[in-house]
Length: 199
Image (cartoon, rainbow, N blue to C red):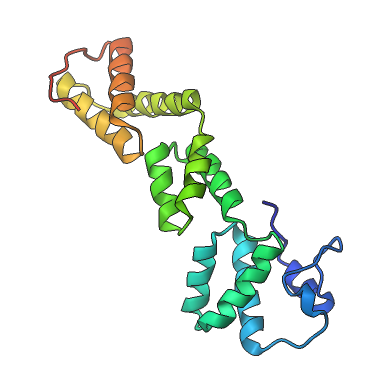
């Protein structure tokens, strides 16, 4: 989702339209005067979207913290949704792509983060379905390789548990974590002994 620049809000206040001539969230009211609460709500949303994309729930909570009444908040927020500037489906897809690359997170962790941001479960499922299994496996493998370079290798069972725990915290399934850790330990020669309680 393409976001507006910091100056977009100011131009919108003057013209009722966004750069490029597309209708803004307030476009349907043209040059009508807005209440102070509406202006404050729009300013809050503009400022937050200028930093990064946000979910509807994130914006709703931000407006609440700023003391915007619920009716005004919903009315102004809906205008941004109608204008395509707030889109939870696009937000979820972008969040999954970004966080999987930058933080190496697996599906479970990504889903947890999106739920905390109030994204609908159906949209989360769609976004997570786009995660490529081979890419997810490669990210898990890179995490293990990186961790192994900094670990003092001792008891292979202890090492295995620590590595699997690290992948679990990153949101990878136990089955995938165990397989990747076993393969990387075997490849590195760090140890190949596993007990039946691992993971």
